[in-house]
Every structure is written in structure tokens, then in C-alpha cells.
Amino acid sequence: MIAATQLRVGYLILYNGKPHRVATAIHRTPGNLRGFVQAKLVNIETGSNQEVRFSSEDKVEKATLDAHSLQFSYKAGDEFHFMNTDSYEMIALDRDVLGESAGYLIDGMVITASYWQGKVVGIDPPMFVELTVADTTPNIKGAAVQNTSKPAIMETGLEIKVPPYIEVGNKVKIDTRTGEFVERV
Image (cartoon, rainbow, N blue to C red; front, side, top):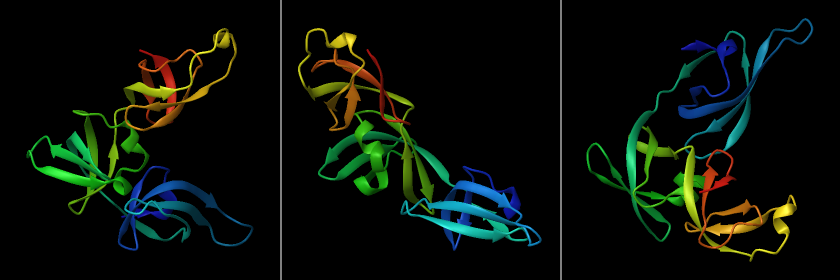
């Protein structure tokens, strides 16, 4: 248990029996009233967020998630199949659990999965991935001089903005934290 005044962005806490990540935490002391902490909490299981006000005397319980390495095997419909690299157990996860990270998954990729009470509640792909461009508009002569970008669809179905000189078949490096193009590989 920690005091509500010690909450920091990124902490994992239990709120109403569910794991939440602290997105914002502001300590306020208005005039002659008692201080409080205004926090924005994101439910790890559902992704929903809510504003919560804790009094300065409140205590919150820190949540601990288990982490396991999973290797991506294949996709079937909206289910993504992984193998636990420790137990060799096969696990199927829905696109809802993976969120935006589903667009970065390629065969054989090892990711870190966060578990809450034996259930996967989210994944962390590597910081950078290299994907092949499957579709984009053709290169236009002289376009490299301009500071513009064009949409491109990657081999996984992910759509990102790329510079005009990128063509179909090019391999590009993408930052998974922002979803932005980094460089041509």
C-alpha cells in the first residue's frame, strides 16, 4: 500500500479490484481545503479510462503483473497464436487484447506479454520493427526534394506515413511507440 500522494505516472495500481495504469497524477491544495490527488487511470484489461480524486489520506494498492515471453506463430482470422517460450504452451489472443500492437507482429517475433491473474492483458512489441512495404503510391520524379509523406500499407496490414521515395518491396524501420517511419533498411 502506498499513499495517494506518492502516485506517479506509469504506476500500476488496483482500483475497485482491477489493475489500472496511472496516466496522470496531479496533487492539488485548493485554498483552505484539504489537499487531494486528481488522477487519470487507464484500466489495463479494458483500456477504458476515468478521472479519480483521492484524498491525501487515501492509500492505494500497487498491482504487480507477471511478464512472459511469447513467440508469434501465426494469425487465423482475428486470432493471433503465440507460443510461450518457457512452457511451449500455445496461446490464442484476440485483436482486442493486442490493440495497435497487432500491426507490428511478424512470424517468429518474440514479444513480452503482461499477465494479470493468469490472463494476458497486453503485449509489448520490440521498440523497433522492420516491415516490408506491400502497397503504396508510385514514386514521383522530384518528390524526394519535397518534405511530404504518403500512406503505405505494410506486409502486416499496418498503415503508416512514409517519405515519397519509398516503393513497394522496400523494407522500413518503424518505431512501435509512435507508429512512425524511422528509416529505409
